[in-house]
Length: 184
Image 1 (tube, rainbow, N blue to C red):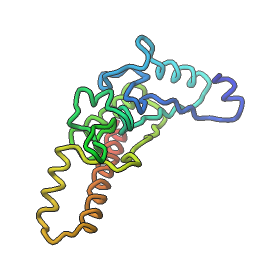
Image 2 (image 1 turned 90 degrees about the horizontal axis):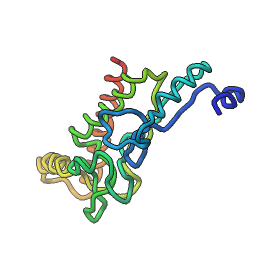
Image 3 (image 1 turned 45 degrees about the vertical axis):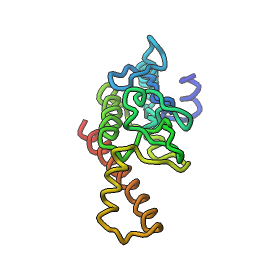
């Protein structure tokens, strides 16, 4: 398949290595669930691609860990890091606003860069889900403390401030990943 890929003129292979379901297709000490029990798919793809002088950019579904329906992967060990749907039910997305979750996501990406030395990485799902969500408990408390400091904030202002709070969390996550992977 990689020979046909190269013959087509394409030069970058982009295998998904951390799924939206929270599983790793590589040998990970950080992601608790492996997609393939005894196979490091990324190591094999990297070796075969490099034999053919193809670049490899692993695709990492950063924030999801189970998806819209239910938490999976790391969220089974750390449910406190997860987002909730509008009714308060946990969903399978890590909260980019939670410092411990951000640390874990950054460590996951750094593990791939350190272990496999890819030519680049593609950060997929580096966002909040499209549906209305509630923050993880720690981030919700932090946001409420920020908003309480300004009792004059109305509903529209509260909505805008929550959006800004989420953007700040995502921006911090992207900054951490960028700076730490570049150091590696």
